[in-house]
Amino acid sequence: ELLAKAEPSSIFNAAAVAATLDLPLNNNLGFAYIVPYKTKQKDGSFKQVAQFQLGYKGFIQLAQRSGMFKTIASTPIYDGQLVEQNPLTGYVFDFTKPKNDNVIGYAAHFELLNGFHKTLYMTKEELQKHGTKYSQTFKSGYGLWKDDFDAMASKTVLKLLLSKFAPLSIEMQKAVITDQAVINNWETEDVSYVDNKVDEV
Image (cartoon, rainbow, N blue to C red; front, side):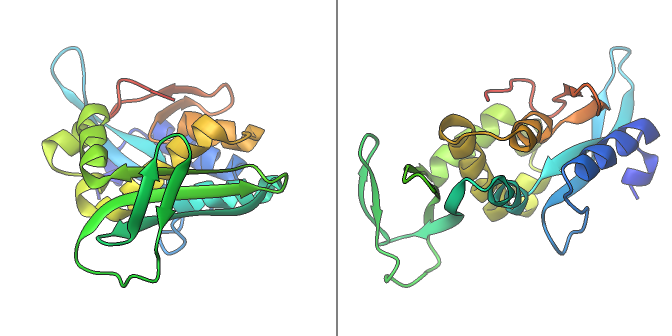
């Protein structure tokens, strides 16, 4: 209903990016989404626009297609599963410990075919601070961060891990640039980060 009120060109450009990345806009697949977003104009009025968003499964799909990754995953970490953490040498998890009601953080991991591997772990509190700093909707208490925190947290650790440590294919670079943006021109990758004014990637 809200998307129907969005500026048509923003919907078209978001759909065009999804098509160029070959990621279906299907909620059941969880690869990519077009999300309505209300933006405040200089004259004080509001305009509805469409924002392109990748799901964490979309990032995994693009990484797999590159042919450089042996494994890639993102997962919640439950109380008791984190055994050791060292920001320089890495993290040790014990996944034989059963899942429980207390998620303490989220981890993403990849290994390349050449043997290079990296893991990023962020506590739940660190991710909440990240959301508060970089997302207006998170601070306002609505949107995907509120509706599906697990998915957004898993995506955030995976996106940060890939953008900082992985070799980025042309498709992956485009995904990082266009994720959570209103696409002004899908061909030139002219984008506006309406929810996230500071792009840290």
